[in-house]
Length: 92
Image 1 (cartoon, rainbow, N blue to C red):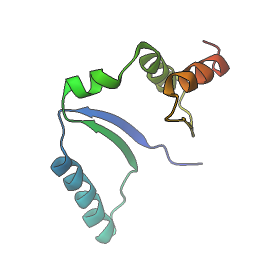
Image 2: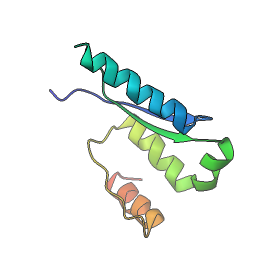
Image 3: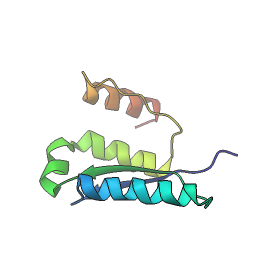
Image 4: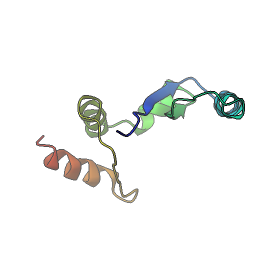
């Protein structure tokens, strides 16, 4: 079975904290410790998150939280169209 990956959205973080998290994980790996895989997306401020969060994107995040997907592909040129496409496939 494929290991689950913890996914987090961090608001109020910065690049130094992200580098520290990666460095800590690498040091644990070098010592032979097990490190759980993680995916983090960091926004410096709430405003930065709010500036990119549309209703459809929030709806998508809620759906993915309830029904985790192993893979999601988006076209950066038309993200709202992709969200609508994914949503229709998910039965929204």
